Image 1: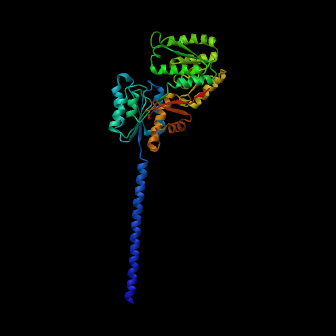
Image 2 (image 1 turned 135 degrees about the horizontal axis):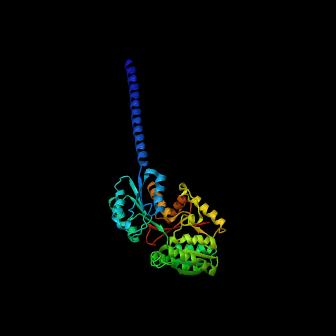
Length: 388
């Protein structure tokens, strides 16, 4: 009997021992699993960086501000550097600056904003040393075929198609005549000629009269002042000839101080500037008092322009893009890089996905096209309009 009791006690002790051991192992396993989860979370939330390269403030204020706005929004995630002031003579320095971003092991994307050619070698080098880094141009103007080969996503404005969209918008706004002001050195540029031809073809197909007028060339002779004086004298003559339902388009940014000012006086149509932005000529001509803190508040600026347009009894006869193209493209490029890092399932080669994401980011419709049908990573964009 005693032996049986001893056996029973020993069996019970063994059961408790096994249970205790089993419980310890479970806790160890649980702790190990918890540690693995925590390590996974740390890995998932590990910081990364996106580099954005822009011109300096004095060379291109909008593009520089776009870089600064991204730093303000995302903090240390964004590394903003600027290209040399004298870019044409210091291209090698610019290339070295871009390549140096790849030295940072936390760098996961590089966005290059230049609007000039000569920087492709930098992105080729980044591809060579850090192929996992996402590269986006917003824009640079090197050979498109070579860019598509070495750069993940190339972005630019659809300069040529704007010849069609501007003419259609002018017609929608009531234009019966479309006047195109330009000068010899501009009309020697292929993209401007193609946009001109598209604009003329579209205008005539819509039943509008298309008129070409050559101004003094601001890059020769009397400079911008002579061009502006010509516009000041010629525009009233053309409106007297063709009437107020005339759209004025000029190929040079320096024209728009006169074009918008005369529009307010002569009451003609200005469907879009050569570089569509609410910050070009509108604030100066309309005497808008924009505080420094509101310099990037385009909703407010557009509201102010609309109010001044209404005061001039010009509602619906002035239009443009609600965000400067030189801010839209760089900022969207950074957001796209972040999206591609955070969401590997996002397909930047899908036009509809790009358009949906751009609208989510900007609050406005943005239309994407391929630069070439056989190129699936070089996109040109047009933004929906605002009518003042």
